[in-house]
Image: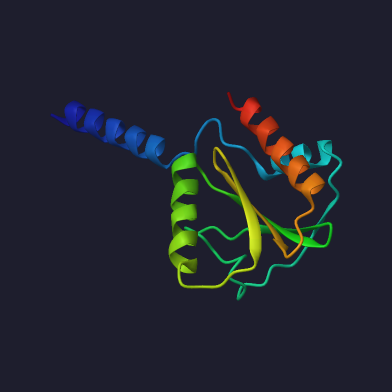
Length: 141
């Protein structure tokens, strides 16, 4: 009887560990930053404003905040793509009745990135960000 109880306990613990672990193909913040730098994008770390609608916590994750060409770049790193999708749903719910400044967003695996360009979108910068995201997609295939 004790062996079967121990076996059940071990199986339960292994299942619990598996369900809480992050996605094996998860992208790290360093990988995102490297991909951006490969496209000659100069980003500087910035302090995020917790009260700002773009920069708020989404699905329990606060973004890493940067400045790119004088514009805000927010990078959310989630444990999995499923959690990232929940983060985007959270964003949509929180902003559905709000007027926000202009932004572009990018989703790759477990990463959600917002480029807040406000009024003037620099097409060259946007293309470089998109190339960075495409490169990240290719790296996790």
